[in-house]
Image (cartoon, rainbow, N blue to C red):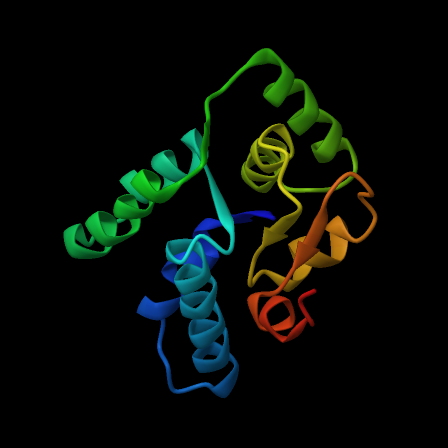
Length: 144
């Protein structure tokens, strides 16, 4: 199974952990990363993750997130097909940057797009080409 973690997921451990939901999403994201390292999941990466992570003002966070690029089974670059797909997603009401992330995940053949953004996940529920999921829900799903 191939997963794509959006920038919200990668940054979740750096968010204020005082809220229970944030702590649970952090733990779920760390579990997903453990599964990636154990080769139980494949990670997809994209130029959009590079772009957004590059804008992170905290060098140690930027470096820690960038390390995951080397663990990815796929690294998607911008192509006309990725841009065309993103335009179609924007037409469905998804924000442009989010649409580019989702389009990259689809280009990588991902089974699941992981995000902590409830608004994005709600919009993705109407996109049959890929399944959007919160990290907590994902780790709680039974595995065959």
